[in-house]
Length: 209
Image 1: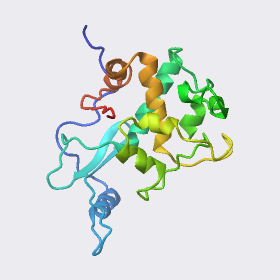
Image 2: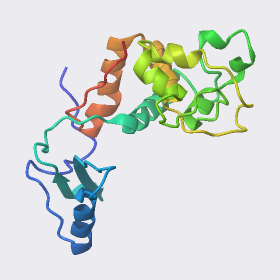
Image 3: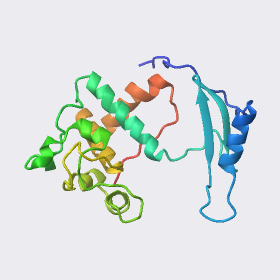
């Protein structure tokens, strides 16, 4: 099946785009400056996009335009976009109770997809990056990260408390996986509905253990 042309134009060619604005160059210089003592920045790459075009970019030694880099929490935007597409297609809705089987028998059954999107579930899934918080435990100790997150208990009424939490995004990722039929179908869905239309050609979605 021939692919449809991307909805968006190319944002840059193969060459690195140097900043033409002195203030922008100074900002990139600052981003790559290292302090004399830890903690060090260790900046790998900075790419500035404006008006649909790359207007400046810089990379650390050994890193380049084609070097794969971890997306980390930028992937939250991918997950949210896929939930939006599923909503357009009638596969889910922010106003629906989150389809988490572990929550059917208690108060957590009232948690909606929107609460996961807004990180207002009230569950004990705070992310503080101290190495011992629930999100750190989830990432480093559990093969089934969404399963770990689904077992968290409430510490506040939903929508009464906000706290940043990658674990809620893991639950949304499971909503996507189950809603489209599994891991392979998730990859096909993401490429067909999001990456290809945006002209994103070098994307890797990784799954947990």
